[in-house]
Image (tube, rainbow, N blue to C red; front, side):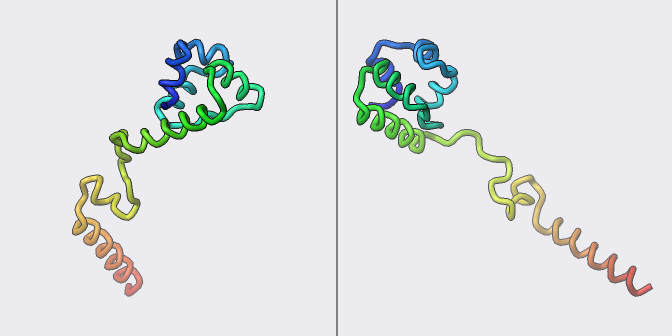
Length: 115
């Protein structure tokens, strides 16, 4: 059982959970999507247990399952430059153009120092 199933089992909407726990609906969505884990004060923790009508173990298990499911889904939009060392290749420039620029910079500095 994940966080969404836990909420639905209690017969609650995301908005109801957010309102009753005094948190944002985005937080509830993030819990269910496995983007974040529930973090709350001890009072809110007990309120959540009563709200979801579950045991502490069930809440922990549901949170863990949501997080684990997130890692099995397709990743979101990839970063534009996933590896700084490959950023020139990812952005469409080729290695030889970078090498030529570096060579010209070295050549220019050598010519300048010889004058």
